[in-house]
Every structure is written in structure tokens, then in C-alpha cells.
Length: 237
Image (cartoon, rainbow, N blue to C red; front, side, top):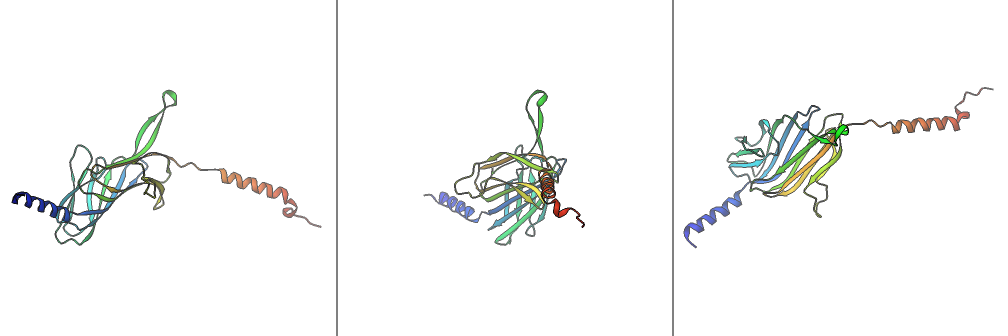
């Protein structure tokens, strides 16, 4: 093996050993009733290497990207691309062995509208969709996207959740629940290697008030009065 090849191999090995590890990557999107959205993102890093690395954001046409917190001297910018938006993160020398960064951004429209049916019966479905592709070499140990709906809206159905969960995964790919008092849909994926992708699409509808329990209460009250009328009647000698 020539000296040049050996040197290249050693440099490549050193680069891999010194590469920044992405332990956790979380994005939260708060969607308003008109679709305008405010988002936050957080990165948990291990062995942060001084310099620049890039990371896909998975948000179409984000604006007003700002670094909220991170090691002193850190920077975060958007890299113009024709496809998926990329974050460019600059880490300073002397960062701690485990570092965290948080950032914020805005998105013009969080909802999409899909035509359903034909003719006079056609309706428009309000959808909330998200897709993420790891286009970079760095593996992401844990990826999580949280969409929070405004008051008065809820998820009626999960239309897409990919990739399918593996046998070793305990939780579903998309989980519905509540975060900070808001209805939410969460997409989660672990060990995201270069080329791996995850996506979700949920149908969003107005919250429907249920009168069932009120009707049940009225019926029970009526039965009580009927069967125990002797107890509730005002009997006087």
C-alpha cells in the first residue's frame, strides 16, 4: 500500500471517528386555524466536531430561521436547494462533549386540501402532511416530528404512515394524542440512515360535540323520577 493511500485511509478513519453524532432531532410545528405555522427544532449532539455539517429540515419553504440556543459561537442558516430545505450548522471549537441546539422558523401554510369524490358530491379534505428524507451521510439516532392543531380541530384519520413499523418497534409510526393541551400527531423514526425516509398524512376536521352523554343523563334522570316518584314527591299528611 502506497504512502498516499495509507494517509488517505487514516484521514478518512479520523474523520469518521470525529464526526458529530446526532442523538436526537425533534421538530415541533404549531399550526393555526388559517394554516400559518410556527415551528421549533432541537438537536442533541454527541462528540460535536468543530466545523460545518448539514441536515435536512423537511419543511417546505421555511422562513425566518433563527438560532434560539446553542454553544457560544454556533450558527445555523438555510441552504438554498430545489428540493428539501437544508440546515447548515456551524459548531465552534471547545463545544462540550454533549451539546444541544434549538432554533425557530415559520411556515406559510401547514395544511393542504385534497379533492375527494366526483361531481356534486365532491368535497375538499383538509390534510396535514409531513415527509422527511435523510439526504446526508450522518445517521440520525432518533427523529421526531410533532404537529399541534389549533383549538376546534382534530385528526379524524391517519391516511399515511411510512415506513411500516418493524417487529422491534414498540410504538406506532404515527401516534395521536395531546401536547400542551392541543390535539397532536407525532411521526417518529429511529436510526435514520442516509436515504431513509419517513412520512405521515392525517385528515383534519372540526371537533364534533357529542350529545350522547347528555341524552343518556336525561334518560337516566327520567327513569329515576318515574321509579322513585314516591321518594321525590312532596307527601304531606
